[in-house]
Image 1: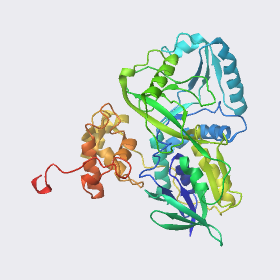
Image 2: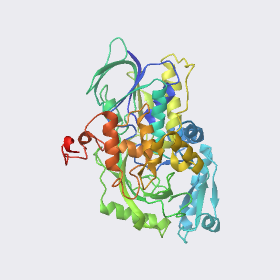
Image 3: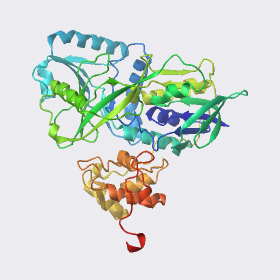
Image 4: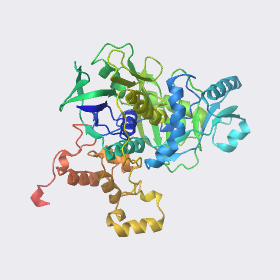
Length: 481
C-alpha cells in the first residue's frame, strides 16, 4: 500500500510531491495529461504576486505572502528564472486614488510593503505609460517567474528524491476501504493508498465527488492573452495592473522572464473545462483595455494568442483541508490566482501540517532540494559556451534559430527523471518552438529527436494530447531514405 497518492501534477501537485519527497514515504503522482503542468499551470500571467490584493485573513493572503517570500530561494534550488521587477497598480482617474489607498492598507494588513507613487515618479519608471496616469501603488516584491520551469523542475526534484510519476493516467474512481485508506482506480491500474491528496485543478470537484457529496464546485474562468515578440525592448519595466475588480486583477501588460511580453487576460465564466479556444471579440476587448494602460503597445509584434482556464472555487478562497467524513482524503482545490505564487507554501503546509499529523514524517539523510543545473546556452558567456561545445558537440548544433536552442539542451531535457514525450513538453522546457516562427523551423528536427529517444516512428510522435500526431504518412519508404 502506498503512503500517499497525489492526483494532479500541476504546480501545486508538483510542490506537494517535492515537499513530501523530503521524507521516507512511498509517494505516487497520477496525472491524466501527457506532461506535468499542462493546464492551468501552463497558461497564466507568470507572475509571483506580492500579496497586497487578497482579503486579509484568507488562505489566499496567507499562502500568497508566504510563497512570495519563499520563491527566490526555491527558484535558485530548482534552476528556474526569477526576476523581482515589482508591480504598479495604475489609477487613471482622480476618483481611483482612494482605491489605491485601500489596496495599500489591505497590503499592510497582509504584511506586504508598498507605496503610492506620483505621476512624475511613474513616468520616470514607465515612459510608455498612459500620460493621463494619476498615481500607482508600487509593490517591489512582485516578481516574474517561468511557470513551465517551476512546475517541471519541482516535479523533477521530487522524482530525483524518490517520488514516482505516472503520466497519461486518469483516475476513474475512488473507493474508501473498510480497513482504512483508499482504492484508487485509473484507466491503467489500481492503487491502494493510506492517504490521498486531490490536487486535480479544474477537475478537483469531480475527484472530490467520487467519495462524497460536496458543498463547493469549480467554476472555470477563461483568460485570453496576446504574446508579443521579445524585440520590442523597454515597452514596460514592471508588471502593470489596472485596479482589480470582482473578476480578478484585470487586463495587465507585463514582461516575462524570456523577454517576451504578455497582454491580458480576459475573464469570462464558462462551463466547459476543456475549451481553451480564443475569439476575435474577446481579444479585441483585451487589446482595447490594455491600451488604456500603455497606448503604444506594438501589436504588430504579436506572435501568438492563447487562453488559459482558472479553477475558480465557489467558496472564493483556496480549499486546503481534509474531508470531514474521510480525514485521510485531502482536498487542495480552487487554487486560482495567486496560486502560482502560493504553490511552494501550499506544498510545505500540506506536507507538514496535514500529512504530518496523519503519517510519521522521517527525513531522508540524502534528500537534495536542488535539481541538476540546466545548461542554457543563452545564459552563458562565449567562453562558457565554447567549453560546453568542446565537451559535447551537440551544444554547437542550433536546432531553434528563433530562441537559439541547441540539440544538446534538448538531449539534456530528455535525460532527466520526468519523461518528456511530446513536442509541447520540449517547447515548455527549452523554448524551442516559442519564437516568431512558432516551430516552423525546428519542429521537424524535434520530432526526429523524440522518435529516436523513445524508439517510435516519427508518425507516432505527439504534439501534446493523445491523437495530436503531426505527421500523417511517410513521403518515402524507409528503404529509400
